[in-house]
Length: 125
Image (cartoon, rainbow, N blue to C red; front, top):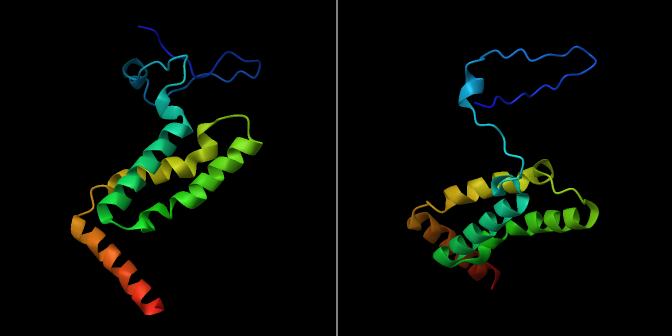
């Protein structure tokens, strides 16, 4: 079995010293290519898909509001950053995982959100 070395030989004398050496035979060896799961666009698409589903399910546009700062951040990153790295879009990944959980909200909670939106509209009229 191929063993993954996480510390390469170096001039400073730093060597591997795992606390749990048995895990190195269990953990998979990282592939040379970037899997889809490590690309920020994957999570952005999940987030947009989940928020659109929530907006349709709850019949309110309020669920699309969290997309505004995330899409703005993505646009800025496209303009100023040429390295598409997971760490630069970490907030998008966290938001996408949270949005997946929102899909499992009971419909009654979504109804309350829609009713509060309608109440706010009536107060302003």
